[in-house]
Amino acid sequence: MFISVETLQLHNFVKSTSLLDRILQAEQSCIRRTRQASTMSKSINSTQDKDNGSLGKPIDDVPQDDEDDRRKRKNMFTLIIISSLGMLGYGVYGTVYSQWIYVRFEMDALGASFSKLEKSAAIDPCFRGNFSDSPFIPLLVEAQANSAHFNMLTTLCALIPSFFTNLLLGAYADQIGRRVIFIVSLGGNLLRVAIVCVVAYWNLDVRFIFIGCIISGLAGDFASYLMSIYIYTADNTTTGKSRSFLMVFTTAVSWTCGTLSQFASGYFIEAVGYVWPMITGLAVIIVSFVLTVVLLQETLDKSKVKKVSLCQGIKGIFSFYFDEPINPLHKRKDFILLGLVFFAFSSSITGSITTIFQMNEPFCWGSRHMGIVSSSFGLAHSVLSTIIMRLLQMVLSDELLVVLSLLTSVANRFVFAFANSDWHLYIGFGIGALEISVLAIIRAIMSRMVPQEKRGSLFASLAVMETATVAASGAGLSELYSKTVSQWKGLAYCVMGCFALASVIFMSIYKIMIYSREPPNTTVFIEAQETKNNNTARESDVIISDGVEKVENFKETRTEYESTDF
Image 1: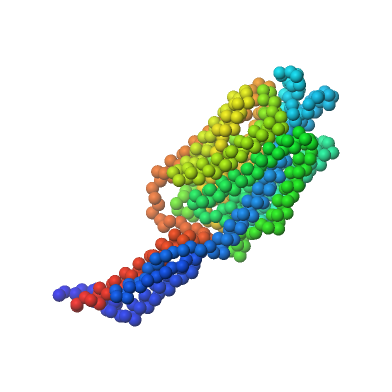
Image 2: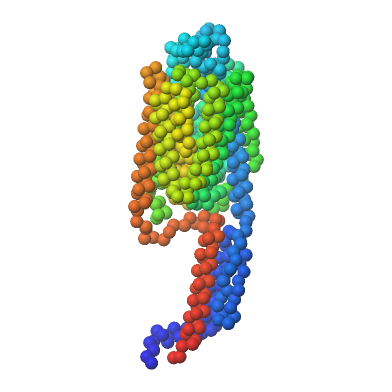
């Protein structure tokens, strides 16, 4: 019988019992270390067949909550409470302020006639009285134009400084931590609301509001507050569709609190006027701020943070769109296309003109009517977007969910553009049920493309983009409305619909591109931090099973060669 040299060498190797035992011990030690490193503790019951000497296999895996999972759930619960209170307070303030500022310009336009009106502006904003149409239409058109122009100026005062602040916060978002961004942004908005309340209470010149807008902008404005919420959510969730769902869920809960505040504000305004509801909103924001300082825990491990200079930090914010990502599964053009989707859809959002639009002919909605409609549809949107998304995730990818949601926003804008009766607005509100989840899902998709230490810079880039977009489009749409309100007040909504349609096109291109892309010939990218801190039970099973299989192969090889007759 011919025996090759390689076979003899292999035979001598496997016949060495002591060496083989050491190999088996090393493999078993590797398995034990893998089990200890897993974030999901398991109770594994093993049996061993002594007749054939096979290695026992785990037959019962019972996952147990570990400390890291409990900490993340606690962080998410705290975040939802704090952000909900913040949105509740800001919702009350925002609803009342948008009506109050328009009424202030109505007072200026009507002059002495305003004090002679029998009904308040909160009940009859068009001042129709016993007439089918308002006798003050020319003056109300002037008030709409002046109010829209003032909103444009306040938008610029807040968003121009916030652009640079978000650049600065973004550059150091992965160094200073998450709590700092929360506290700074919420504190700035608190001061802005406080200044507006002072102006309203003592009936001061409305130009003092610019001071509050500048302070809020220097603190990052509302964009940095949203940025901090999404970064915190990403830090306390795992990758995949669960992160998308939790981001949408957090947004939906906050949105629900905001819409419920609109319902209460309508009745509150009719009962006591505009000032005390705004002060109430200020009080709720103060509570949210205090809870943030006291309860919110830091999620960034600063001991592992790599210090970078300001220039390097700013470069890191935009590096996603200019440099190839370290994740081989994604390309630079993926970030560019998703950035365009984010930009186009953000350009189609503006709430400053919607209140003016509804308070005037042909709708003339009072505070109570606006509160009931906004809260009813807002609550329905929050619930439906969460439930429908969860159901559609079973059959659709996140990218297709975004496309579907964007199509509902396109329909919403064009219905508003041509609306001339109340039921047109009801249809428009109903069609746009899914649009509140768009930005949350886009953020979730992009967060899965980068490791944890880069998420702060990523969300900062989106906050900077959102700030610049809202500053340009918000100011531009408000000015467009002020110039075209006497000809076609729906033109601004038509432009917003075109921006939303552009976002549908960009998102469709992205979906087609990643669908047709060939699988990369590289090892699947695994986030180092996620692997270290957030291993799932499934990943542990794969690693452990692989180690067990290797040991069994060694046992079978030894048995086979020991039984071979050379």
